[in-house]
Figure 1 (tube, helix red, strand yellow):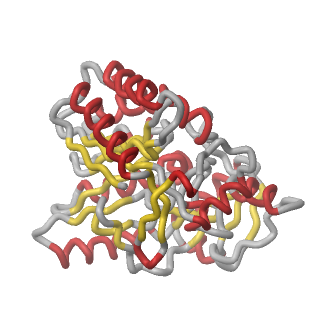
Figure 2: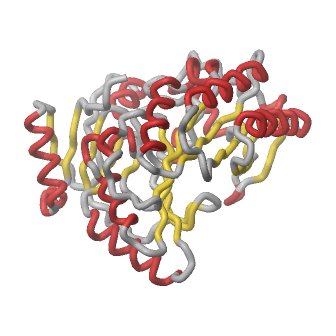
Length: 341
């Protein structure tokens, strides 16, 4: 899969007051991309398209270069203490993604160029919590690796965290464009996690992302570069022959990582869930999706902020968890496993 290149770029005038903003403008001009001005990354208008679906798809290939003005970081429990805001939005088209509703009417991709301000705030959080470790998640509302070949914001963040005493960085990706990150001075303080899944899930629900084999090749590269490695299997999805499909996943994963140092390997498992608003948006944006979202087959579970979600019935959920845990124990004994419903 080729690296992401935006079809349309918007730039906030204030972004050009920062070195990265100037650099990106010059880069995109050199690439011959259409560049427009916007007063705010939250108020982007004029994305082309004759209807909502066309505008949505065009928005997913639109990049907005802006300033992160709100420097109060969101919490990111349980994976980290804080979400470090490097970017928002994703170029992928994963049908099940929670960003379908989280980003609502703003599915375009935003990158923030005031990295010095962001790093200063991150340092304040670390100072407040020291001597405890402070973990930062860099992929809560984006897939930062899919964008970083253009911005190198992630690389700068990896090296910033690498020189801190109490900071740690983590992120997850479905993209394999990692070569520019291999020589980053991470000092073992950044965990690289790849999102993987069965062939059925990747084929049917993850268009616009790197192939499974490409992700595995990238995982070998980053592990050999000394990064702590992890995998996220999400969503774990009940499809036809799912047990065979997930067994093959871990078998291929194990085969591809032969000879790689897997000390400290982690797995995060998240079963498929959806909300009523998400279902409505997904069916509108991906009208031919095969994603099963039948409320009658699910159990309603109350979530945070009073918003409930539909998860698998207890028996199905238990079968999923025990099966996947068994595969991991068989192929990767000693790996740390976390399971989320």
